[in-house]
Image 1 (cartoon, one colour):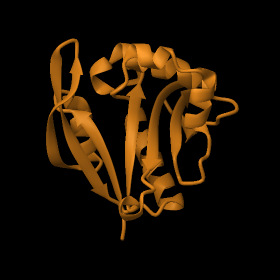
Image 2 (cartoon, rainbow, N blue to C red):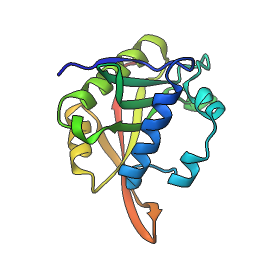
Image 3 (cartoon, helix red, strand yellow):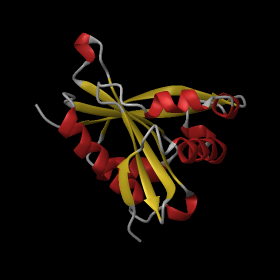
Image 4 (cartoon, rainbow, N blue to C red):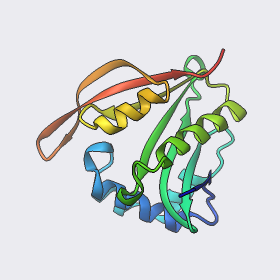
Amino acid sequence: MTATIRILSAKSDITAFRALREEAIIDSPESFGETKDQVITKTNEDYESILSCHGNGDFVMGAFINESLVGCLGFFHKQLGNLSHKGMMWGMYVQPGYRRSGIACALIEKTLDQVRLINRALYVQLSVVTSNTAAVSLYKRMGFTVFGTEPCALRIDGRCYDEYHMQLEIGL
């Protein structure tokens, strides 16, 4: 199965992105900083802002199968002076029926290609819950290395989840 991978548009992809983001939070709450209540109360304007071109290299990549959005991955380029050499991947999600199909890998590759094209970022960072061994393995296969562990990075229903902070050097 081949997915079409492209940057999501604020004009045409809000509804699909909103639905996928809500699904992601419900399906895997331990993988996201936002709660279900925070996500479902966002307005279309909030989602439009996330998907809009801010002129600084921020974007959300989407994976489509037969015109349906089945996966996404965001990138945020840090703008603050001495941090501008770094960017963050965020919000990785692939619907359960499409996991282990290469879609997550394709999203990461396309995101990194886009970062190299339009950004000044030298390092791409991400955070991942340590118990998500499939995601940790994927990121390591893609060249990311762990540079730290944050204890109790997320707290959901009284349970703590540790996160690895990972980084990939993409150029100098």
